[in-house]
Length: 283
Ligand SMILES: Cc1cc2nc3c(=O)[nH]c(=O)nc-3n(C[C@H](O)[C@H](O)[C@H](O)COP(=O)(O)OP(=O)(O)OC[C@H]3O[C@@H](n4cnc5c(N)ncnc54)[C@H](O)[C@@H]3O)c2cc1C
Image 1 (cartoon, rainbow, N blue to C red):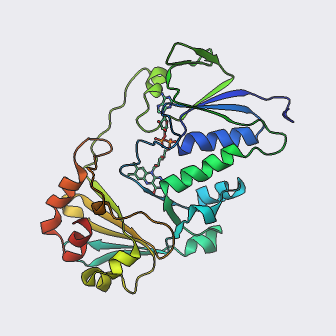
Image 2 (spheres, protein in one colour; image 1 turned 45 degrees about the horizontal axis):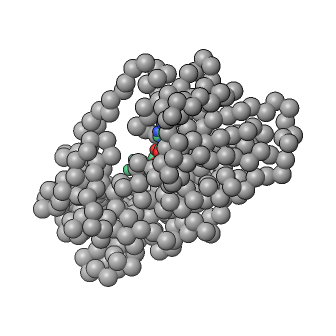
């Protein structure tokens, strides 16, 4: 039984990073939490195909550390610096020394696989602190609609679940938010395109052209920007950690997260206009 006399019955919609974090915080505050995830697995974020790496700063690390996140298991890599080059001239436009993170905020900046962050949160969900109510996770249960005034949500087969509090964490493509605001907010083109690649340092060092750029570089982020064309390539590389392969090594089509076009085909279009260092990474 909960130590808290004011325990709320809470429903969280979505088992993404946001939903799981909300569930953990609310459970730790003494509430009875049930998570509803529409997919059969709790790791099916719609953002996965585009973003297998997630960069995590002190703000998130401080919180998940307090919850008992297992950083060793996540095999997170360090990001110590950030360099921005012009993608055509290779002139360095900007450098940020990211070591200030540890000095100023007590945590390094880390890069980890999105799945590792997700799995680490699921481990915390599964381990209930003494006196708290275990979180229930219902997979394969899509929430079809909400009634904000009543606190009820409706599942696929019309089942109604009454709650004291509903947390809607159904992602950037949220459909449920429309049932609250009564209007849709379509995505807008920003006029810039960002391509993001995760490249193991081993692979970079094996290539003479790339080696010349990265040899004396610390682990971290490198951007190649062509501001005149609104293009950003972001490459992350790290000595440590279990980091995913460069996207070109996967036989798959990457689809724009918001607009549905073939990302690799688009990236290849710019290959000819960039320096070898940039195009080498796009392949
Ligand atoms: C390309 C890219 C790179 C990014 N890089 C970073 C980064 O480096 N660092 C960082 O901090 N952030 C990054 N982000 C942002 C970060 O990924 C998101 O902020 C985070 O994933 C949001 O988590 P979420 O739980 O709100 O949503 P999601 O991860 O989208 O999860 C939503 C969940 O809700 C479920 N769901 C949806 N509708 C329903 C329903 N009706 N019923 C039940 N379940 C439902 C979905 O299946 C999904 O599992 C990046 C995002 C993108 C797109």
